[in-house]
Length: 140
Image 1 (cartoon, rainbow, N blue to C red):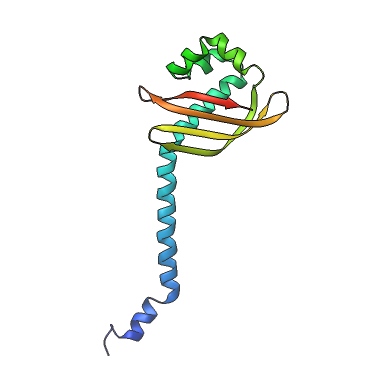
Image 2 (image 1 turned 90 degrees about the horizontal axis):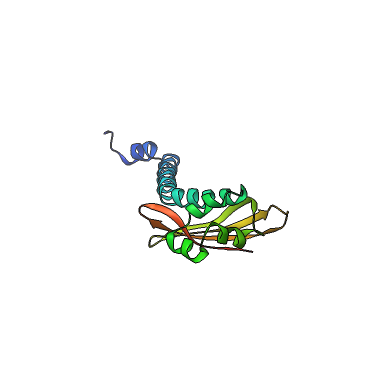
């Protein structure tokens, strides 16, 4: 009798052990995928949250500073941003959709405005000199 007989192999690598190996592999894959997505989406989410937080705190100059130069040009000035968002001051928000494709980040989700109404927020972001900046937004 040798150690490599079929019965010995079946006992050594039974169904339970194979299932455990597959589950461990899936767990490792899941953790790796989480960190890949976190590294890709984290800076976009942080930039979007900084923009929304500045609006919440009525710090329009900070929100304006997080905007890309082309959006700043369309708004004209900090005052232009203030007029545009005056009825849309967020108190809470959460991003239900987050994506980065071809260097463009998109965030969208639900928001509660400071007046208590609920609505949606959509932000588009792009990299400017290595930093994610808001290139467009839509609130309703």
